[in-house]
Amino acid sequence: MRPVSDYKLLALYASSHYLIHCPALVFTALIFPILSHFELNLVQFGMILTLKSLVSGLCSPLGGVLSDRFNKRIFPPLSMVITGIATLIAGLFAGASIYLLVSCLIAMSFATALFHPSGMTTISDRFQRGRSKAFSIFSIGGQAGFGTGPLTVAGLMWLGDGVLQNWQLGYLLWSGPILCMSLIMIITHAKDPTIGVSTEMQTETTREVRGSTRSSTSTTGLLLPAFLILLMIMALRGFGRNLFEPYLVLFLKQVRHVSEATAVFYLSMLTLIGLPGTILGGLGGDKYGEKRVLISAYTLATLGLILILLLRNPIFLPLTILILALGQNAAMPNISSLTAKIVPLKTRGTAYGLTFLFPIALGSVAPIVAATIILHFDFVVVFLITIGLYALATLLLFFVHESSDTEAVSTAK
Image 1 (spheres, rainbow, N blue to C red):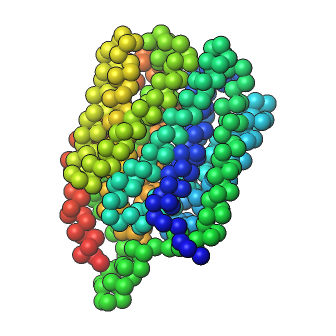
Image 2 (spheres, rainbow, N blue to C red; image 1 turned 135 degrees about the vertical axis):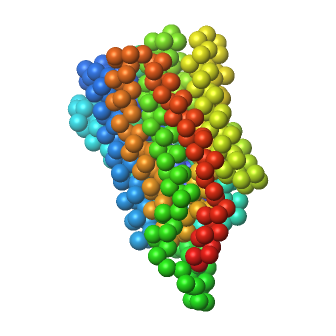
Image 3 (tube, one colour; image 1 turned 60 degrees about the vertical axis):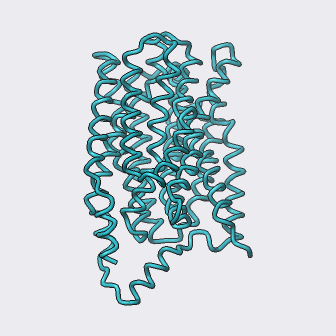
């Protein structure tokens, strides 16, 4: 059987990445209907977000370990099947019980934890050259999915004359496409046995056979100073982002006085209008270096937050959202590419799992913290803390010495 070409496989994984994230922010976009339907308060809403994030964060290293130790090719199709079934159940039955809805959200979070490490490891191995560009295409899929989900909700609100009559449609609409993609992935992986077979690993094995003294790679690859600092940076960014983003719709409606549907639209635009940043970030990372582009992207995102806080006239909202979105999106492919540079392939699945663990696990408590701050203080405090965390993460990037760490790994080989 003829193997799938690298770029066809990348297109398949980027499309799957898109669909698996389409339901991700639907819950956040539906904050007002869900609060009303289940009679929840803001802290309870935050607790559900925390549980959802914790599952995703804590299971990501598990997904990485499974990817490293077993056949990584089975996990992307499996994760799509789980997501498709969960969205179908949420779309049909979740309105009857908050516990059923939360169970569906947990299943979706678990599925993404399986998908990312195995998918990213496969891409990093297939594209040993132009890796940042490949990750930018993969990231575009995920970011477009994050934005399209809320955009669907906004469309339903506008069609419903400002009221989403059946909020479960926000999930049901995505179950069909996700299940169809599951079938495509299963067929593709069944036809092409080379998917998930590591060419880079074969090269490393050859080097070892030729007399390499490389030992305990699984330990040294994950304890390199640059990778540890990178995890710290992502944890700060993850906590900061989860402070403001889950309540952006609430902030825009109550503080900036825009309509609910328009607020949800801006939530979707926070990722969609930043997609050019993902492309530019990937191209820039290959040309100028991931670290340099990351510093620029994080600085731009911090500036965007400052402007959202200071510019109170709603007419400036599109500009401030654009600046924030470009900065956040440009960073993503370079984080993935930099991790691949620093960490050897044998532990790369686990490494990618850890890059999701720290920002998501630490960030999982942020919605509860933010809800408490909003109820007792003000939205301004939330934004000030987020700006400080973003700025600190940017400063820490100057201490990531990617070249020395890469040389250390090469020496270890």
